Amino acid sequence: MNVCPGMMTRILYVDDDAALVRLVQKVFGRKGIEVVHAEDPDHILRIVREEPFKVIVLDHYLRSGTGQDVLRQLRAADIRVPVVYVTGSSEAQVAIDAMKAGAADYVTKTAGEEFLSLLVAAIDQAITNEQLRTEKELADAEMRRAKERAEALLAEVNHRVANSLAMVSGLLRLQATRSRSEEAKAELTETHARITAIARMHRALYTSEDVRNVDMDKYLGTLIDDLDATLRDEGRDVTLRLEADAITLSADRAVSIGMIVAELVTNAMKYAYPGGAAGEIRVSLRREDPQTALLRVSDDGAGFDPGAPAQGTGLGTSIINSMAASLETSLDYRRVPRGTCAEARIPLR
Image (cartoon, rainbow, N blue to C red; front, side, top):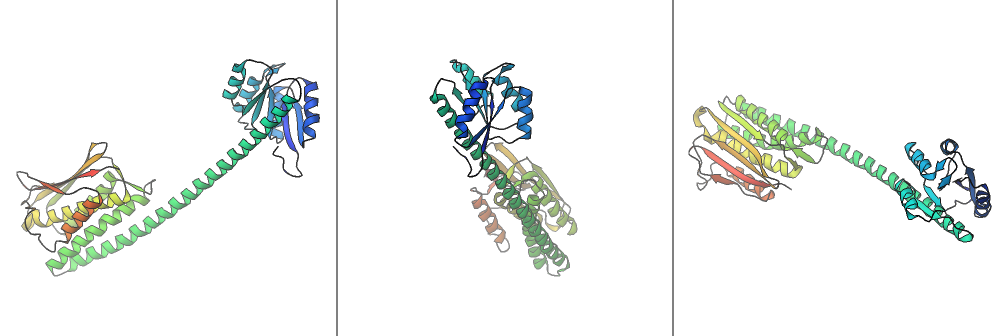
């Protein structure tokens, strides 16, 4: 029996057989178990609310109904003291119904010491199970608190990283507008777009309830807005359009897609519409099936030969290929009547 040293284990015994209860009190008293007797259901609810009990032993046949009626009242009152159901009936359905109603265990009432031995064993098991359940609830609660603390810390880290990257991005943007070298201005603009893609991912994380995953439609929306602002600052007459499904991806996969989009849009800004020509750049991320999404960046500009030598340093192409490899995909260029269309099929995991 799970009895704490120096402490009496208290059991509430609900039965209208006073002689049996006295016998149980006598036998259990030797084992350090105090047995409190109750008959009236209203008295049962009141006493359980006012006094602590390890277990309720509940007889099936009572003067004012059955033990199952009492079980329902206990559960309706949200009293979670484990119940050992006692029945003199040989019908198995009585025990089955009691267990379904919330009893922790049941014992068949018989003559002699066997009944008391079985009852002690059932009470002991009920107390052990209740202790395990309580310990599990406490452990689960602590895990939830630890998870909440970790998520709050991670959100704060994402907040600080996003703010720091936004500051760096702003400085690059300012430097680009003041640069007298067109080559330096172009390189600063590209770097600004790359940092913006990372910063926006961190911002999407700390503004979301989920600090591990990114809603791609919202993330790409803010990224496109930033790239569009860069176009306006440079006086370009190019419109950016986005079509994105509500797809959720992990942070590392989201930033890889963001980097690819930033590179392709920046390339289209530089080469698709030279000389300040007007045009449109379209970005889409569409779910093809439950396992795959199609990323597409297209324009109606001067066109692009993927077999031709890279223009500039080739860093953008290297970044795109690296990001595509991290997504377990590759970037392909479709033949289109006009302009350029780049596509990548993204596995959704």
